[in-house]
Amino acid sequence: MREEPRLRVAAFRPDDERLAAAVELLESLGADPVADPMLAVEPTDRAPRGDADYVVLTSKTGVELAASEDWDPGTATVCAIGEATAAALREAGYTVDVVPEEYSSTGLVAALEDEVPGARVEVARSDHGSAVLTDGLEAAGAYVHETVLYRLVRPPESGESAELAADGELDAALFTSSLTVRHFLAAAADRGVRDEAIEGLREATVGAIGNPTKETAENAGISVDVVPERADFETLACDVVETAAPTYHD
Image (cartoon, rainbow, N blue to C red; front, side):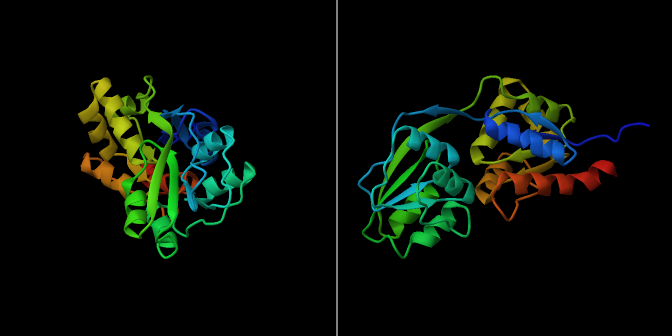
């Protein structure tokens, strides 16, 4: 009996437990994962400032790096931009005081804007954090300081998915941030297939976490088919595979 063809789906997570989990999830959904890390973490060996009234962590990576520097939040209100970040904080032994209903910079600004006028807010994150968060908090009347805990760079070996897309052999792609879009395009350009990869993605099912990621992709000519209501990788993967499967088997 001939095996049913499987969706070939690209995941761009950093090459650590997140990529391993992405591969496992996609396999459980009956897809053929293309593990193509578009992000690598370079720590700055810095920790969030300890004199703030509010401290905002935006990622699991940031939490782990802050904890490795023996960060002590003191009496600050600790805010996590999403449940994955909150879980990492709790696992590291920190109390989480605020998690917005909408897991985004906009959602966190909405959750804090009535509380932070005149307050000192420390935002600790990567070097590619969205200005939506810091600008929004400042507009609400907070005194905002940002600490870069890590830099996000593109691994030099990235780009397998771009070549597959260029050859029409990629069925779906899972973009988790604007930076993954930009790094995908840079990897495609390095391999001489940028235009072809963009064209190939038009025939694939493309998913993006959040509207900023969608806008970055669409501004580059990549059509986005899926933006999940819940901004996490599992929901993104499930929604994209569900959307792609009927088209794939037609």
